[in-house]
Amino acid sequence: MLHLPIYLDHNATTPCDPRVVDTMLPYFSQSFGNAASRHHSFGWQAQAAVDQGREQVAQLINAEPTEIIFTSGATEAVNLAIKGVYETYNSKGAHIITCSIEHKAVLDTCKHLEKKGADVTYLPVNEKGLVNVEELEAAIKSTTILIAIMYANNEIGTIQPVAEIGRIAKEKNVLFFSDATQAVGKIPVDVIRDNSDLLALSAHKFYAPKGVGALYVRRKAPRVKLTAQMDGGGHERGLRSGTLNVPGIAGLGKACQLCLDETQKDAAHTSRLRDKLEKALLKIEGTSVNGDAKSRLPQITNLSFAGVDSEGLLMALGKEIALSSGSACTSGSLEPSYVLKALGLSNEAAHGSLRFGLGRSTTEEEIDYTIEKVSAAVQDLRGLNPFWKEVSAKLKR
Image (cartoon, rainbow, N blue to C red):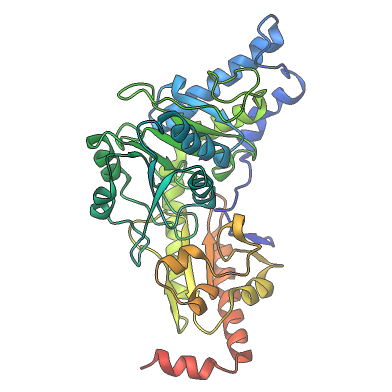
């Protein structure tokens, strides 16, 4: 049975899995101790939950538990990784390589470091959203200390060639950091296979609570050193001070365990429904897919509808279907998506794009309803657009 509203914005956030909530509940009221309290049973119980969560996170990405640093989320993890590397290694050099379609957490952090003397190269992407590995290798200098390339893009789902980038970084003796916020829990992520030295993730992207995340920091071959960005107490091996969010960490750990068991099933489910949605909507005249239709996450499609403004579409659909026109972190901006612009889209095409993010609980009935409603809304809005006939004629040439 169909229940409204329909949620198709799983790239922005996901609902907590009931099994995750059940795991968290005892640490709010029963085992509520501080994990740093080492002299009584309440603290021991909290520490045990943290230890288990650390092991579960590590297992999901093929790391060691001692390589997992808990944070408040991916944004903090990104800041700790990039700023931490820059402040630790800038005596060797100040050059950082990143990409033009990174999340704002990475781009804004790099801009901040530029004011402090960092030399940052922002690599372009092709029309599919992929970096050119040869260009990346050519950009490496003797002063390069970090390559920061995201695992998968939050707006278009394109998966970067991280294993190849990691191999190049290893050969050139440059640290490799990947913001894997959208990838972890959706596709297999392996820090050993990919030669990742640092990797960020966030719990709320894969059915765990908001306000908790983690940073993987390699401990050998090479041993990565970071300068802490928060002082006070020396928690998390001195890299992230602050009382640990025990319920959140327990939930993050449980979500990681579930992903180990269910990622393949979830990916098959979401990709099948995504493909059905995409195939139906592409029958609408002037509709196109943004990004790489092959190398992308299984649960996402980003579509441009010619002759339609995405804000109008969102207003027409918002009461019944939750969608977005891009990253939740930039949803208040009137500017077209910088990610879509980097692919070469015009302002009009970028402004006419919607992101559909499916999830574990998305149903066939919801997809059928979405196809019907989006198709009708596009037709209605084009009927109100005095330039649509002109746009349509151009599309047919």
